[in-house]
Image (tube, rainbow, N blue to C red; front, side, top):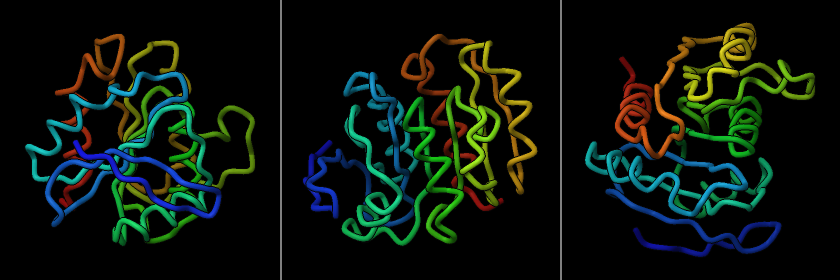
Length: 180
């Protein structure tokens, strides 16, 4: 993976890039307390599937404006969005508020913010998968369906962390990048 620093309205942001320049791109947003390598195995598998990956460093909190500026700076007209923890919260927000910039959404153990009493986030209108790693999020996954106006899937993985289930997570992401 190569690192690139991008200037955004709120300051510089370092991202890790991998995969071919052509084709589909996947923006991976980790949780604030994730390790820097949380999506490395998944990104490697996505690269094998001919997908370009852009991974934010954990602990950064860009807003929707910064994320759109990031896409513009990288020359990405649209992305498939993946988020975990606080990164999933940012993913829900970006997907709900930026029509045409997000093609699909995959979130890990984090339902739509409205399910958790945050009514400020609109519903999303795109293909969405919620990956449930921690069984305590199963009810939240079910309740999220009313905030997704598009194909919605809930997938339960048997692993305790998404990096340990890299193959299954990558499969779900690849399925969402396809238009069929």
